[in-house]
Image (cartoon, rainbow, N blue to C red; front, side):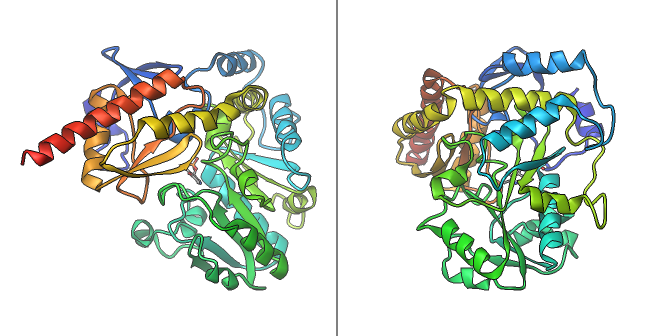
Length: 398
Ligand SMILES: Cc1ncc(COP(=O)(O)O)c(C=O)c1O
């Protein structure tokens, strides 16, 4: 299997972790030798309710028995997609009323950018340095990390970058700007929270110049930071909200939500402003509906902030300089990228799944399922601190 994996399946890096999966359940993934791995990554913030949550699995099975794909997005009335978009609207402010369902996060970002251009008739897009919004051409154009995108230029024109949390840069948002796109909490950059009312100031400037504000909540959304969406912490409501990842409960999804007025622009003049074959797929929508229902009806969101405190308490170590982020979107910043690499690889040997962040090489990603137990969190933290102890000992004996 390993040979075939490297021979036939296209890779994204020279050194994938290449663990061969047998099955997964709750907070654990099992390899083909039936070794259990405690999951501190949740498929990179995607498995909100852990692996194969019974409510998600039964929603999928129920839908499988009714119908699969029947028509391109938006033509037929399919209950899972309608119920999902309605439930989202019920938990969002009035201006975020209508949702367009896509197949992935990056596609939702594409749709959001197109909508902003269509609505304003402007072309300039402002994004943040170190931002990550996906890997298709439009989303890559607003990625604030030149090294990873220079090989793919030319990208879309008229994109400018401002420093996240840099209040002076806000003045670069002008009457030429169609939209500002920001992650509510920067992910790839190292789980950087907005500070000193930054988002509110950006919101104010967007309003002053008639630019739209797009907040990308693909990673921090779906209860991961203790509220359904992270913008709730910062009192800043976007014009377009982009979601994905954890919304699907382990199935592929993306979504962008805006007002009725804005969204109707994609319908006409020209019609078919944004189309997709599989967006809103009934099985995926059923899984997402079950996931969202569980997140809003259970205590999971509230417990997320208690779980953050447990991690912060049990992850104290001289080789950890900082723990950034909020709720169960945390990044432990070690003293060096080398130490981070050692911890992530050693943890896998010891049955704990950790992972990197895109642009911050010293960060260890800690984004477990919201359903992880306190006991499992403490056990995982213990594995990390024991590995760090060993690294410290071997460094001091050199
Ligand atoms: C903030 C953010 N935006 C967009 C994306 C892209 O989503 P997808 O990988 O589903 O295309 C990601 C994925 O990591 C993300 O974290």
